[in-house]
Image (cartoon, rainbow, N blue to C red; front, top):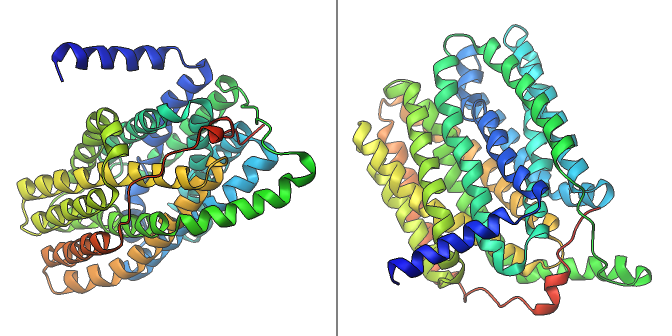
Length: 420
C-alpha cells in the first residue's frame, strides 16, 4: 500500500468519525473519562483490601473474584434492562450505582465492613454500563464500520485505563479517603454528562408484535448454540487476562513499588490505544484459528518474560502480553456480535458473562497460587504458571479454533437497534 493510499484511508476514517451523530461522539469521549475514573480504583481494590483494611490475601483474592464475576457476569442482565428502559437510561442508572459504591468505599476506610457492599456496588455499575455502551455504538454505525468503531471505543477506554492507575498510584498512599471521595464526585459529574449529552437510540422494528417475543427467544438460543466456541475463548481469554490485571498490583507492591503499577498499566493501555484502531480491519478478517493461537502465544511469551524479574523484563512482558490482548479481545467482540445478530446488548452481555466466569476462576485460583509463591519468596514463578496456561490455551485454539468469521447477511444490517 502506498503512502498516499494509506493517508487517504486515514483521512476517510477521520471524516467518517466527524460525521457521526453528536451523541455518539460524546459517548466515545465520555468512555475515556469513565475508564479514567474506574481505573483509578479498580486495579487497587486488592491492595486496598489487604493493605488498608487488613484482609488475608486469600480472602481478598476471593472478594476480588466475586466482584469481578458481578462486574462481568452481571452483564447478562444488561440486555433485559436495556430492553425495558433503553440504552441511555441503562448507562445513567449504572453510573449512579457506581457513584454510590465509590462513596461507600470512602466510608470503608474508617468502617471496614462497609467495604463488602461497596465493592458489590462498584462492580455492579460496569455490569450494566459496558454492554449498553458498546450496544449504543454498534446500533449507531453500519456493519462495515463495526470493527473500526469498536476499536476506537476500545482505544478510548484503554486511554483512560492507562492514565487512571498512574494518577491513582500517586494518591493512594497519601490519602485513600480523598481519592475515593474525589472519584465519587467525578462519577456524579459523569452521570450528569451522560444524561445531558446522549440522545435516546430508537429501536428499529424487526418482527411483527404478535410473534416477536417467541421468535426472539428461539433466535437467541440458536445464536448461542452457534457461538459456543467464541464464548469459550472469551472466557479463557479473560481468565488469563485477570491473572495479569488482578495480581500485577500485588506483585509490584511485593517486589518494588506500587507506583510501578501505574507505568505498567500505562504501557498496556497506550499500546491498545495506538495499535488496535489501525489494525481493526485486519483483526476482523484474519484467520480465526491462527489469530487465537497466535494471541495466546504472545500472552505466554509475555508472562514468561515477566518471570525474569526486574523493570525491563516487566515492561517487555507487558508489551508482549498486550499484543496478544489487542488481537484477542476485539476479535472476540466481533465474533459474538456476528453470531448473535439483531441484539448487540445481549451479545455483549453474553461476552461479559463469559468474562466474569473467567475472572472469577482467575481470582480464586490466582489468590491461592500467588499466596503460595509469596510465602516461598518466589513470586517470579507465579508468572511461569500463568505462561504455561497461556501456552495451553494456544494449543487448544489450534485444535478447536474453527473457521473464520461468517459473513453478515445484508438483511441483518437493519436489525441492530436494541433500545428505545
